[in-house]
Amino acid sequence: MVRRAVGERGAAGAAGGRGATGARGATAARGAAGVRGAAGVRGARRPELRLPALEPYDGGELEPDGDYDGLEFRETDFAGQDAGGARFMDCALTGCALDETRLHHARLLDSRLTGIRGVGTDLAESSLRDVELIDARLGGVQLHGAILERVWIRGGKIDYLNLRGARLKDVVFEGCVLVEPDFGGATLERVEFVDCALKGADFSGATLTDVDLRGAAALEIARGVDRLAGAVISPAQLVDLAAVLAAELGIRVEG
Image (cartoon, rainbow, N blue to C red; front, side, top):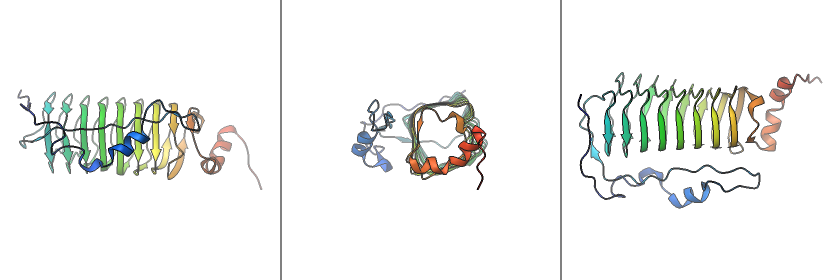
């Protein structure tokens, strides 16, 4: 099996620097971990990527247990390929297709994914650490049993995101649309939803600690409203959830 590795890298902060992420100062100000706001909620730490100069990917197929280090994947079609157990470190994926791509048990570290698209991408039991996911268009993504730490998901739309049994720590969903996301049995710690629409979310059996839902542009909970202990919501959201909460408590509301 051929393992792809990159040799010497350029100095950090070269062409692959912050790129589309923009204002790092604002990011640091908003995402300092351990700082409690007025509601006593600890804010999530956002990743601060400083990618080195990247080498372009050679265009071959991905391989199971492959080692991809310091590479730029641009407009590459990985549909149906198997990269189970692979490691991606200091990489940038831009405009890549991941339809039915198998990334089970993969590790994505210190990497930025921009404009990726795909249906049925398998990232089950994978690890994402210090990752930015920007303007993704995904459907039926399997992330059950995965570990997400310092992950920033910005923009785009993800349908039927499966995070059952996953562990999320220092994760921010910002400016994105999540249609029927499944957090069943997941553990969420220091997770923020900022200008993000949650439609038909399932929190059944989930455990929440310092989860901030106040900034959600839309908050629709289909199941698991009884698991919101450990989360903070706004007064307006409480009014919106009143009917769901009443049904959960067995309260009949009649005119």
